[in-house]
Image (cartoon, rainbow, N blue to C red):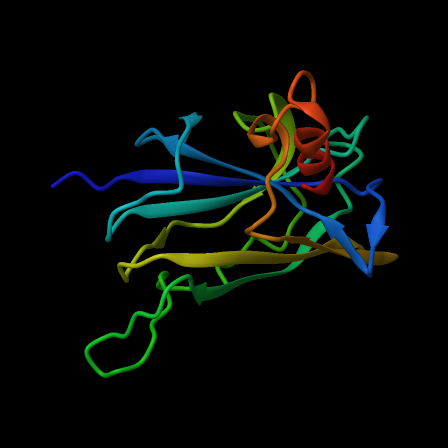
Length: 184
């Protein structure tokens, strides 16, 4: 049996504008080779027993491995909620992953790894694989606290937000299309 492997790429930018105490966490979902290298972007549709590695990239402009040497991932949490009512055999809702707080190494990033979602090599931290344990449709949010001993920032991603190539282009679609694009 072949186990499908994925990398959920998350990008933190220490120069990002803060909104309501949070910084936006960029993200992309990619297939993965057995060696752990990112493949092409993939839809967020996985099978039970698939394995996902969470990789956080420091995508701060002008960031380098040297610039990131004193930065750490202080905490990482996955918050899940069923998108539709679904109960397990005991009548309860179940989380889709075997861990909602996969462990990141405490040390500084040691490698500039290639990112499919962000197009380039960036300092990064990776978890070990997390296994998808429960079938269903879920809204998935991520909260990341990252920084140095001098301080840290909290980054989050809203699972309903569409950014980049998923946006409806405003050009040539009239005022209604332009309004929809701005509201995303």
